[in-house]
Length: 216
Figure (cartoon, rainbow, N blue to C red):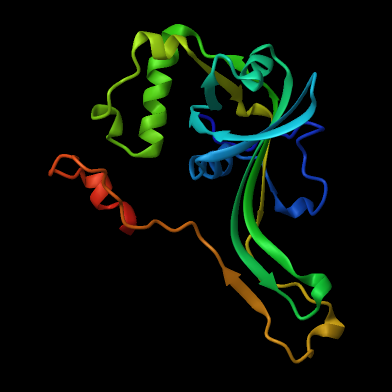
């Protein structure tokens, strides 16, 4: 797979603080792969909408899924122009002046249009969702049956018009604020994993990915 940087399109190019923009596939893929949720923005007969939904990646595509009856899925399946966004908040940047406070983050914005995943590929891409949630889960959970697959729309959007934006450093105070007598630095944040909570009646043999969840 080609991981080299691709020239951004006019609408995907990062304009504000251009030095934070990244267009190489490895960076974009890593940010997408660290996410479980995204926000999808589009316009339909109701006006502008921005809705959260589960997300995963297969190759150079991001995927979402939902009920065939979902207005969002119906609209996007017709090729409605859309924008998909993912953001990981990594820290609060505490500067010496209130105006210079910021946040450290990793984000990806994808422009384009979704297309339906063909029926013949649905089972495998849904398995890949299980792989994304927990490697090995696809071999244990009951696979979707014919009726469940028929009732589900799976959509994909290519990552060819995508841009990452990253901030990962401390405060950038003005020279005249450097001697202001206040603490400055970064308050780091991360997505934490807590101890698994088992449902009553679960088998006594706990899978390795569950045992290792909180320490991963």
